[in-house]
Length: 418
Image (cartoon, rainbow, N blue to C red; front, side, top):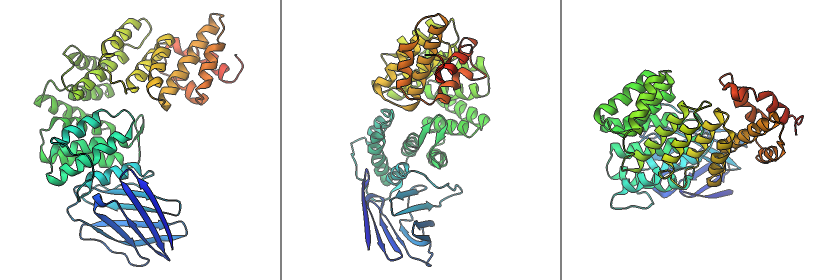
């Protein structure tokens, strides 16, 4: 008999091997246990279907026990060095691909578990959960704290707000970089949004999330329609207008995009954290629209306006502004804001942006017959792959002031220029 035990953010998970049978016991709050037996497939009354596999043998059929009142779609993966468990709870039409990581799985169990959730509960639990979610800038611990609060609230009473917050936990926790998500994240994100809107079709935050989901799926017409519906209900909602602007931008309606952004930034930033974050996002979108040489003062003005509002934990906004300055070949400002971002959080995209800024500045110094060595040393210390550095300089959409530096940057990356 072999026993493997692992402490997770959601409690102790233990896996025991007894010959060819396995038992997995999940944390108490998710009210779920799974037992695997060879040659004995079974389905519970709740409609679950689970595949269980071990490195030492073929897939094993399983018998599952779980409450038929599970609040949403469950997708779980627990991975140990001796075996792995991959669970798929089918409810509704959506099916999910195999997951590669266990973190979101744990969060989902916290969200959809039907037993009492262990976690911090306040007199206004969803207010507390929303505050934790809005404070998220890459620290998953905040989402792990918010998940059981949302779970406890949904176990007491289903609500549009609760499911919308659950959707945010899923999409933030499952985000990798850019438009890349852990497999299954986008499907479950949409499922939770649908549950929120089924309870309240006029819930503006959920309509905003729906617009975002539709845009990620490539349904730009639907994304614009959802954003417009949210604005019909609440014309002052900054995120609804940001979603409309993003949709219009994806459709290359640049003048309309700018009009929507200006509506946001000409109004006060808003009183809630959510609305202020929408305002900051609109300001950064405004900066991006003007990221061409000659508009440096516009971008500096944006940076000055938002600085008092940006959360001290927010590296991403400064990284985005550094990228904006880099696009217009203003590498001095790009370096300032790139450093600011990495001082807050060391993250891959931020390192790539700063490395490109250092290489760009080094290339400018080389053209001016000045010593590029200090900038090259800073750039190389970030250990960003050469192909990542070259990407912006060699892009077919690169500004001419950036593109002309591409041969020099390429030579620097190859060691021909020092």
